[in-house]
Image (cartoon, rainbow, N blue to C red; front, side):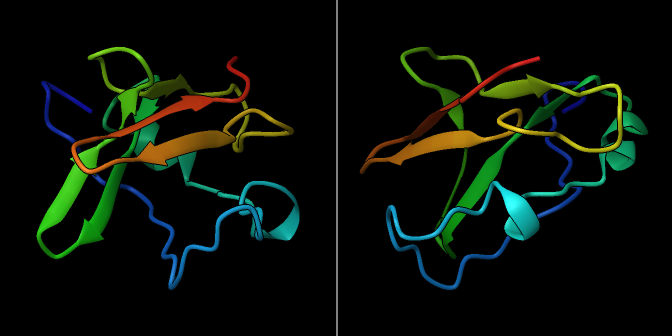
Length: 103
């Protein structure tokens, strides 16, 4: 995010969401963004946008707040352990979330 403009750098495509049946955050299936692409923007934080359909794309807001969900980038090249793990809630009017652990 720079000057309130979101610049996509990486994405994960979910063909089908099956709640509580698959973990995309640990092990081999973990979200592994190119953090250098974010740093080039330049930004020390990453933000998240979700596309639910061709008609609905939304920035993910911090749960219980009106601010956008963001994470401080780690010093290394990837998020490790529980860092970078996001819990997301999708409702009829908004998408909110929070980080399991933050740096």
